[in-house]
Image (cartoon, rainbow, N blue to C red; front, side, top):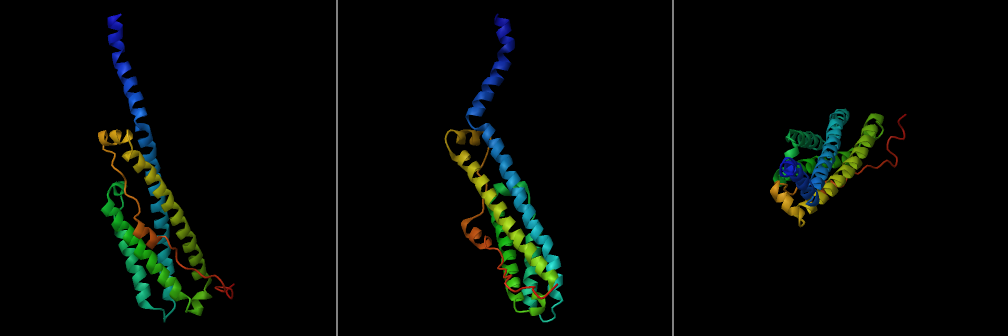
Length: 207
């Protein structure tokens, strides 16, 4: 009997440990960690989609000889800064890196907003179907960015609450599950406003 119990001891210990980990939120940490990674990947996907639209937008605007070059240059420079940031999964655990990322994306969003606002002063651009198509795609992308960012914020909030609540905070300490960085309030206000697009009479004369 003693020998049998001895042989079963490792199994019993494993089962006990599994139950203990499950009760302390270990499985929840795994689930929410994967959820935040998935949400973060979608944020990056939508920001990349926006960045990919900009070269075509810039080329279209360049066709307007008198267009404000300073406005165009700011978009090009802001895109360059935003795409130059090396994005890694570890960024979610680095508030300073997340802050730099947010600032770069916010500056790009502001530059795009300025460009689209200025374009309203150029009838030939407003009548350019290619330009209008790009504006529609940008507007849709900005909306997707907002949705993806909000999902990430929600996922991070759930993870961080688990990491800071008792008794799951003990599991977080044991396994070094640090709270993840989210979008800051200041930058959230800055980058949550999509470019203003007025389709009232834009492109109606272009078929």
